[in-house]
Picture 1: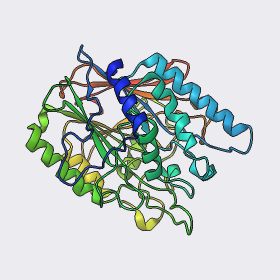
Picture 2 (picture 1 turned 30 degrees about the vertical axis):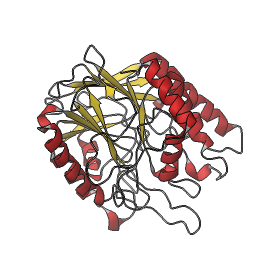
Picture 3 (picture 1 turned 60 degrees about the vertical axis):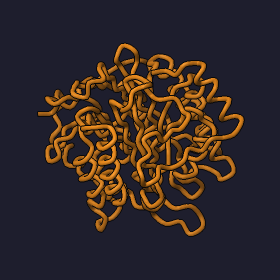
Length: 382
């Protein structure tokens, strides 16, 4: 839910007085990883609404008029959607910046532009990062640290040392409680770093475009400790966010049905880079340890949600693991696309904190039109 003005005011004062960089989780599970930050909770009526922005792609072509115009348009989308939807939590699901177009001396100013509307409405949020966020003049680590510095209500964190692989530090989770005084959460939001892009100068090289295998072991240890501390996994639900879709999603596209899987389906998932672990024939399926661990260890997983492929906004059930996958909606005017695709967000609405209840999700376009409304529940996609 929205945080009280007193809590936010106090937090803003704390951050402005001394910037607070959240510590990464240790390998010994920290069940209160946010220290003095307010707990994220459901609303008093038992509902909880997330709004997911994806592929904002700020910073394209800063040397001409076109690029700044796209950033202004994307800022308009952010402000309008936040004002209309009034979400309890926001997710920025990767490719915040088109890093290959940016300059070292001003790249972090783009983070100021992105988080400004979120700061204005005082909504808590988390970020994942994409292949365009790892470029010669910017890295995922730099974006995370700067976001933590300038956004008091950012819940983005760093993974423990040794988790995430090269250029993939953004693996973490956020607990969501029914009431702020509860001992255990009713929902856990998981965020994973699918890396990709290139390493910073000098001597830039390609960064692997999949969630590193070290994350698989981390998921197992985190979920085991959660169960020990919080009780059976049946007591809480989960959502997972990762920018590049897992490799196993590629085969779903050929099975889509417009009635069962509504939403734009304009981006083929074939070829290099469309899904994880496909930038060369030798890397195919290298995200399997992550995929297997996520689908095995995270229970009551309502959906795995990705961006990256701007022309897709559908959901489908992956049959081998029996999990639902959903695409986001391309939110930013930057990045590739077609005008008829539109720009918008994916909304996710919990009507109950009961983890067995279905969750409603739909696409909302910039001007307010909605489409592709489905229920993420046991019956979906069967």
